[in-house]
Image (cartoon, rainbow, N blue to C red; front, side, top):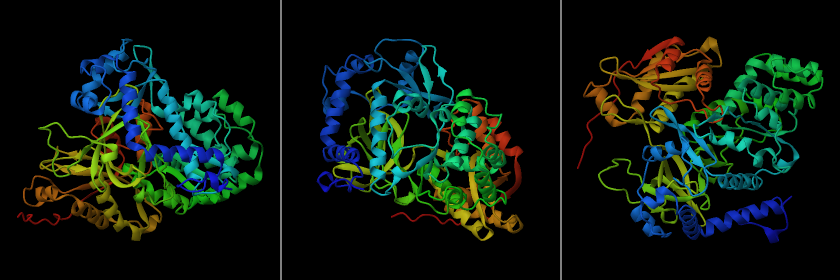
Length: 596
């Protein structure tokens, strides 16, 4: 029940006094966006005034925006890498930050094939925790009664590595889950997980997934929301259920944990909650034994109100399969963050995935924006950056950040579109990461274009009850001319009525028709690109791809299927699983553009 209207927030009536304080904080930050940003920059520059990197630019103790922008350049990771490498190698002087670097956060992005190392300081954990603390007060405005049950969240860590300096390097979520802020978090009835900490903190991905799924089944009537960090993580969890439900139900029936789970901490915590329950075992068996996975989330966890997963950007392609598994439950995206910095949150979490916008919280770092010209982005002159409070509705920008940890005017690479404002704080739709995926000749196809083309081609599969579960691509330049190769893993709901050769050939053409005019001109007029090819792979292939990546050190939490591949072992794995190949039967439509 909402608290007295005296403490009501413009966002809506808060559920508790604690929520009221959190919502008031959001209001204060977003009403005073520009002054907060000014203060944040002053704090960053004052705190790091003695750092080698800032001293290099001769700020002379200045902490104002004008001086900062005129003297400190906009940089990429490659510009900062020599400084970061010195820290990793053991140089303890004040290089980027005047505060000691506490650890490195490994980005899901790479530089020259290696994961990026983002230095961070201890105080940043409190800043990240502050953003986490705002999520449920916002969600409680839209979904009542979340204090009456639990959240089934599949959360994972990975093994840490150490740099020569002795500082650990790990993904940001591993850092958070291992932190005292997470492990000793105070009880909050609105934020109770089915998974004990011990199941989350196990580095063995099978044991962690198995035990978390088992706990979710045991508490199935109490589950009010299901989630993972990325949509792909929840899809992977449901796939795990389809493969392991028999052993899971055996554990539930007998009250004895699978001997494959050897982690002593997991066995100890599970022993406290796992008791023989033949009725529950029969129930789960009844839902799984026929192999019908449509609506499986709401059939096993009937009180689930929504899915809490990131389905923006590249994750949008998982929306149809999550709709299938959940019976079209709402899919919420609650926050926007990266290894470099936590940025903000979604103040309207129950909107459709295509309508998601994030409000950047101005206290998280100092934010600048490069106006993004979708036609040309010349590097001939220094970009003119815009402050957070000066952005224009409808325009796209590339995000640049300065952090307390010592990143100064760092290009994150995210392209955002301003969709509105909450008070004076802009709200953004995540458009894409500023990277070209495919290029054979003069063509340049990005992730958004490829995703759109696949969605359009997938429409041809609907009458055959078939969907694209997963995909990746590469530009095959071994053929002359080169051509795009798209790997598809399909979910065929009725194997007796699946799409045939001709339909999948038409999918190739449908994709080409959706690609940009430069691509189509290259196909039609220049003959510099060959027909697009779709290679259908066996079910489970992308699971193998993820397992391979994890075996090489990728984080299960942060893993995203690469939308373009070039690494030989990955190519060999994909090609060894191909069951059919298909080519566009004719050239796509193209006519010369008229220019005036």
